[in-house]
Length: 545
Ligand code: F6P
Image (cartoon, rainbow, N blue to C red):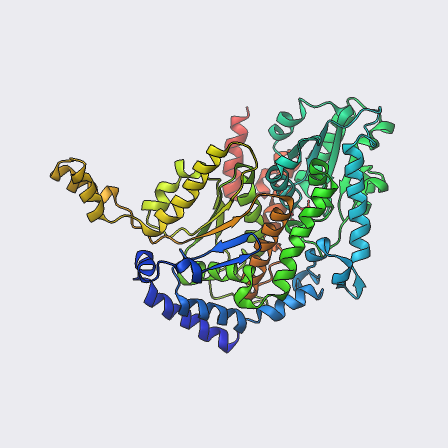
């Protein structure tokens, strides 16, 4: 970490020492129009961070921290195709997936556009042909159902996007996703489908992930209950970088849509991993989503730090996490179709920045990614908002909402909007005991009862939130929103000086599971396991008797 960065980390701590005793009520009393100074708009997208516990001086110091951490130079290195994923010696070029030729992105001196466009054109043409019945199942029957078998980035992105853009998918085939190796997932989802009219997508960047490959083999056997070995290939597609493995599985090369090692799994929605979305909404809508991603990419690439929306969102996160010490971040879309957006951002953020070793290989010395969680509003209000309003922790919230509904029920949308606006206001301003007491007395509540109840019915407020609003949920808006969060994650990783693009942390559990599986299956002695595991396994085995 540079000396300047150290200075600004300390300056920001000083800012918090000043601000922690100032309530958001006071900040708004000093400047009722805080929104005008602490919000940013790009086209129809507005980020309102006026309910964050910052002032102009703190904000200036946050921007200075970004500068001191060379965020712009690190950003430029990513766009230039440098191998910034140093532990895997790879470039990080998911931006190339949604680029135009004019962007001239390169990886290892090779222009990416020809590669990307060839695959993009192929899988989008395939999607359109399936949707309009040109490509059918083995016996000439139209595909009525698509099953995507994948996990992590090979599942979360397509699931999120298909739901978010449900309004655009009414003519498409029925989409089904299963990720878990738990047999109930397979049983519940496949038992109602017809193998002859089901297209099976096996989505796995490595084509080695045990859950996916276990499900894939079982699904192929399911196809073979109806189809012959010579027919089954017509109902099989693979989305992967591992062509040897896809061939071995029996997927014809012209049914494999690949991508590259410079695309991380959690950043692969714009690659062929997005085929389920293309099947659901068609190529035109998929390309519109790519345009939304690219719109934010170019903004991130060129906008000055002070006007750069991903930088802004990232700095809010740094302030919440490293200065205020908030251990979690709640993502709350007020849109039922965005119900899987929190889960998608969970992997994007926590698998990227859930790290404790910096780029030099030393312990980071500060907090990194918060725990990301969330739920759609207004459901969340009837679940855990009690804690947000009257709990003991600071829980920052990102609220998201489209101004226009994706349906015709206007009255519902008005109520949704009222709740969306009310929650961030209530969290910020709270309600003081005196005010609560006065209200109860005015309502005729007896003095003793009112005085006893008032503390329980007061609200500390001062809970920070940022509200992100946009005109409507379209493919473009979704792409732009996802890119906003992708680049926010990049900026935070740059400031924390960590590698956001490897994921060694998932290996230990995977390796242990492989060894334990040999014991569970009876192929190896239980004595080879750790005593804690031996006891637990013995208990479970006894329960299976
Ligand atoms: O969770 C580890 C991980 O490698 C993710 O990064 C990835 O999205 C997921 O597993 C699935 O990997 P694959 O697409 O190679 O099956």
